[in-house]
Image (cartoon, rainbow, N blue to C red; front, top):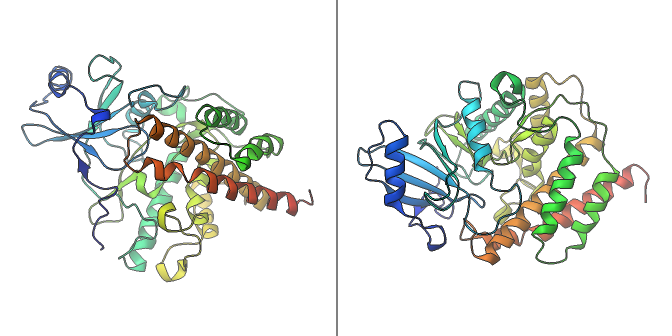
Length: 364
């Protein structure tokens, strides 16, 4: 196994932009979490682009994780740590592994913004989907586990876990396109012609959707799960702020964008010899997911292509928000500007794919 990438893994001292009164937090947690020992020591995790995340160490050696909204002016509905907390609590005891969550604090007087606290799960976060340094069999097992966990999530009945109201029923794609178009406009830092074209194209090419609404993660990637230290087993799925009720296939397509992104800074699998690495092809990976979820029929190339274009546009909206926060000085990651600059090439790739779909349908 290769050495961990400290660019994303590990912790650092708390940045000045995200600093808070540790003594006040300590007193609050000792009052509200049973058995909390106090003596809190705080470090900030290196990874993540949205909600600042911190490791809390206590006098008795226990470790917790705190996720908070970033300070400053935020986009409407963004950084929903309350939604994260609710879905993590609801999924405890299902086949979807999540970290035990302890409390949600909506009182912004404690540390300056809403936050929640959960257990710190000890394991591996794997940032490079090519999984360097591993044997083909190891890679295959890890990808199969990712597939299994996502299928398990999409099999959960929202009503059975108290999440029937976690999103609006119906018109998922239409509502998501409208939301991310507005988010993009609200955080726009430069004119990107391809993004403008997608905002026009996506609502005019909506596919017919007949999916039963399920809990969708919204940002399911290999680096948003914690694997067991030595086994190909997910111990916790992280980063639920974009979760809602919606089309599970659209959620799975977001996960599969990895197969369409180049390696390097974008950490993708495009152009990689998948067979040599032991990583499944996108088609095989999709087929295994459909089998696990009991999907009744194959997904047409046109519909799958639309889902990919839609999710690439969603990612453009996310990256544009990262760029805006970086320019404001309140981004959670020190490499936010670099991430934000990916918005333009991602929009251009999505627009090229949209035009290919039109050409396949015989449209100009």
